[in-house]
Image 1 (cartoon, rainbow over the protein chains, first blue to last red):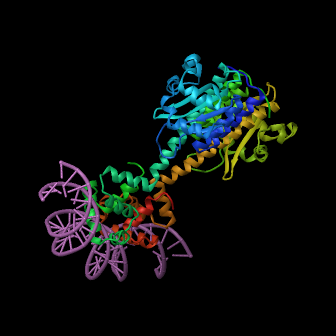
Image 2: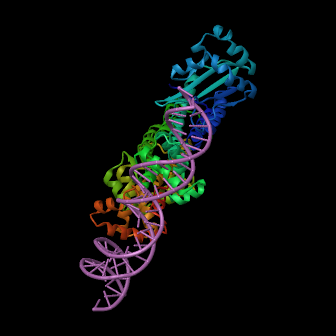
Image 3: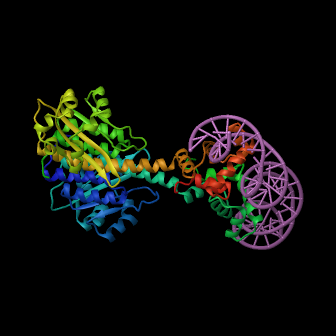
Length: 255
Length: 255
DNA sequence: CACCTTCTCCTCATTTTTGAGGATGCGGAC
DNA sequence: GTCCGCATCCTCAAAAATGAGGAGAAGGTG
């Protein structure tokens, strides 16, 4: 790629660069980059989705699109979306008309009942992937009364998308690291790994805090012997040889 | 700022953007950005320093400069460096001649015995700061047979420096988080916090792994009673009420 | 030198934890 | 209904850890 940039575009690119270095929340980053891209690419509509069921991701962010229409996308149209699966296969920024012919697209329910309702006509997408899966996408649209996107627009989106993907990848791995260090989640994982019952889980939660049998009994409202009985099965199931060992493996970030 | 970019410059800028999103090692990032900047700004020499004594930072990185001359900088010339303190006060990219007059500079030992030896003549610096202090700098130099840097070069360096600073800030806070979760460092901190002796530290290192008194004694090559004796002082010094409590506070990332 | 800290080891008593056997009642699955 | 898992409680014994009292040797400091 070899394209010149106007002063306005240069400024926006620097702003995007700074956003990607500064913003540490994936949702905020996607929204902010969306605003910059609408400006940079002179587009009207923006949406970005993440297709993982992971912890903090609340799915889509969007700009200038109708809430109720998007709710319809999430509940229905995403399942008859003819272009997104093809965009994904591109591995780079692509124009709608690179993945489906205009005539064919104009006849789909997806275009007529969903996109056209909000005025979206010319579109291009970038889908960011890493080895661990889909990281997030950038969907840029213009109204029908505008010119369609040019090769240069695709090049810009592609270059920004590449950096955007790297940034999202880092944010996700950070989130995963953080999740690994959250004690409650770690204890819950440990419990399910070893097939503990609900009550046994209650016991190790308190055990992980370093409490004595007597304290655990008081908190759970049972007798000390009951606590010991649960501990007996926990030791048996986990193979741990001592309370100290148990606490270490419950608190260890690496598993 | 409002400047246009050539195709070559645009490509380099995208490369820098991707580097800043992708590279997670501060030293590598500084080196890589240095190479890009030499290319982008058509400069000859690059150096970058971090002025903190913190953990993993091994000080300076540089390109096209003489090793022995840099050793002299670190041991001597940094203490009679007339420009760096002034650059720091600028809070933005600045040209050498914006912080000292050429005539005055040409008479300094710093210029004649250090910079001139490697051929450095025209220079500009960017110093990145955050609330917690100096994050890293970018020092760009050209030989005397070249043109000096223009306002446009300063603007480019300033914009890139801003994003560079944000990226370094995140890397540092990541490193700090990681350091907080490293068990050995945490145990060492805990030990010094509570004024433990060397031998007591040996004991809690093994204790933190969940070992029994007998195991600790075997590993340290002393009797069980000695271990218990050390444990006695550890309990006394730390105020912990039980071994389990001790293990939890040794393994807890938050203190 | 005397004094202090540290490391080493000891005893005795007490508390806590672990390991091994049980028993009872409750609720869901076959 | 019977069987099974789960939660609740029990006893008895052994092992481990805690708390309190020491003592001796090595090393550095005023």
